[in-house]
Length: 274
Image 1: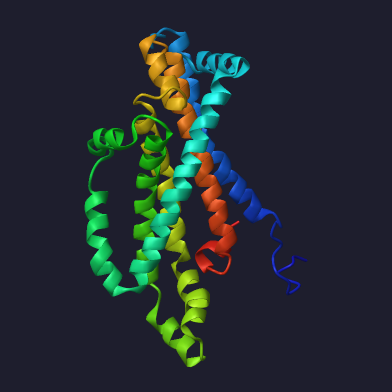
Image 2 (image 1 turned 45 degrees about the vertical axis):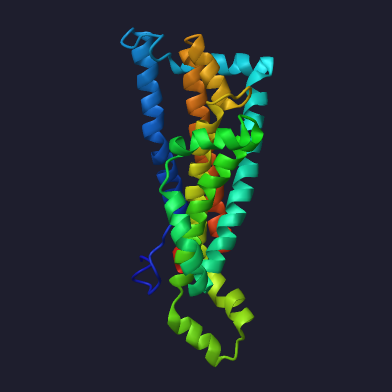
């Protein structure tokens, strides 16, 4: 007699959802692995010249040699510190301005137009002026990172605050919540998905700004490593720095996703994810 005939529910594997999640995780890595395998094969069989694009195995060997010599850890550490400091400064300013503009129409009238005008200026157009202001030292690099990071967080903070459901605000007022409690318990939690989306965009922008900054007059960092390799036609080192940027970007996005899951457990679109 089957489980259905006995009036019970049909048996389902306990780990069905987990297996599905693992399957999707494996699938997400299939294409990158196949691309690396194809790249390696084409390089080994001579379809790609080593001076144009070295094989992944050659790049991995270069990474090992630079790690042993201490050059790669040192430059990577310098770039990470620059990105972290710039992100903290730019993110803090962007979040503060976003809160101010999100809650005040007067602040929007005074601040938003100027912020949008500066946001429209490309990094490369600002670079000569930034060099005049700060030279080519650490301040110049941190300033560019902070500038790039601030805008995504600012825009998404304002957007998140403005998109909070008015019915929730009215419900909070009916329940007797004051302005401070409304902000803490309704507005900021409601704006958090948008703010964290801004953080994810800002993480990507931070590395873009840092690449631009480190290619001008730098004596350390991943950008300096790539530019120095260009002078000696070391395409293996150049490709290595590109792959490191990609890996850091993926890792940063993964950390941002983990932060989303932790802070948005109450949200049906985030809390139900495994």
